[in-house]
Structures are given as C-alpha cells and as structure tokens.
Length: 341
Image (cartoon, rainbow, N blue to C red; front, side, top):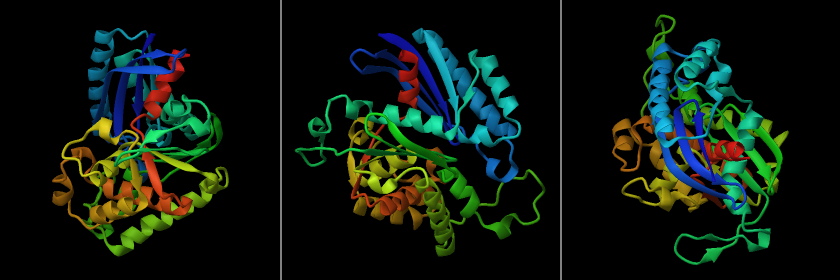
C-alpha cells in the first residue's frame, strides 16, 4: 500500500482525498475524503480574473487540507487545478499561494488530461472484474444487471464538462465549457439588474426561478458544446453513461429521495432518464429557498444546481441514454492512482 494525497481544485469546489492505494490489487482505501465549496471561478467568465475573495476562500481550504495531509502522513501529494485557473489572467497569484501553503505546485492541466483522470477514477472498479460480460453492478430495487461497454464518462464541473469514451483505456476525450457555474453566471442572471454597475462589481442577482428564455439559452449553449464534443468523441457509440461530480450526485440524491447525503447509496446508483427529467424540472421551477430546503442540498450548490441538472439532462437526451450510472469516484481517485503508479 502507498499513502497518497490528491487535491482537485475546480471552478466551484476544492476536494481532498488521502488514501492507501495498492496497484497490484486495484484497491483504494479512503482515509479522508472531504470537499469545500470555494467558488474559485467566481466571475472568471465575466472578468477573466480570479477574484481576491475567491482566492482567499481557496487558500483557507488549502491550509485546512495541509494539516490533514501532515497528520495522516501522506508520502506524495498532487494538486490538480482545472477550468477556472486555466482561464484566469492572474493564475500566477493562485499558483504562488498554493505553493506557499502546501509545498507543491498546482498542475494546471488541460481539458484532455482532466478527462483522462476522470475516466480512470470512475471506471477502475467497473473494469477490475475482467471482461465486459463479467461486469455487474447492483441495480436499485434488487437484482443485478450487467453494464455494457464502451463507457462514456461525463464529468460535469463548475466551468467545464469532460467527455471520455473508453473500454478499459481512453479512446477519445474532449472538454467543453458548459459547467454549472459558467451556465448560471452566463444565463441565469437578470442583465438589466446589473446594468451600469462598476467594473468588478458583483454579478446581477439570479432570476429565480429562471425564465423559459433563460432555460432555452442554456439548452442552446449545451447543444452547441455537444456538437463540438462530437467532433472528437463519438457520443452515439456509448453503451453505458457514467456521470460524475456534484451536479450529478446531487440530482441522484434527490431522485433517490434521500433524507441526507449518503455516498454509499449514491455510488453506482442507476437513475433513469425519466427521474433525471423530473428532478431537473423541479429544480428549474423552484426558488432559492425551495432548493435550499432540499435535505441533500449542499449550501454551495443551491444557486448552480438547476443549471447543472439541465446540462446532465441535455447530455442524456443527446446520447440517448436510458439511465445514468452515478459514480462518487472521479478525477480525485484518478489523481490518487496516478501517484500510486
């Protein structure tokens, strides 16, 4: 076993995994897995820069994670930064702060690298059982049902969404800019409310619930992004859709009717298209207070979950997926495996 620490810093959240990994058996044992909503990508789509308050929230989380890593004695640490820090003009400030706190330089990876980590993290368990005919996952409601290959792994982040098609290894991958935070900031704010505001001011308040025109604008953005993704990834060849990250797991938790967030119940749950559509419609028609009152809703996702759910639904409809297999293991696990060799 090798003890490693993986940090995934995205547009909306920063997450830590400290785990013991055994490459010989494919076993990964969690010692500590945690997440904080820091909204590093706050305003990046609009200003092109990381906001000072967003940087400070992120650095505060890094200081907490540094203490956990030291206490658990991880042999190696890898810090991967995704969409928001790729886009920002002042990303050097971000890099310098992380190095000062954690002693490692964040790797501002490309979308394709991000997709590779996501695929390995999400499918290692699914591939470990051997051939496609031997693979099984428990189905909700009892019984067992096989999963067909190839897998299409979809990682819906805050700033971007990664698509990876593969069968044990990656065949094709593409990252496109349709994350839940980006879609919320681009389409779900009232433009008239922010007109005339000084440069650098907070974005206009959300239109809550969103209008039909705003929803259509997100759908159009997602459709264009999917056209772009299909130039590289043959989405129609997917036999099993595997969904990752907070938007997907939150939609799954709501669809399952959970009274509290339960990773064990969510991991490898299979959510039918009809339930994803029903949950998305509910989120798009609800107010901030109604979404916040949902028992499984993380406070940091209240404003962006409707857009994230709509991205997931649009993908499922384009791919023709009858269900999504939800994975709690994602890019963070892929980063950990990269350290384990």
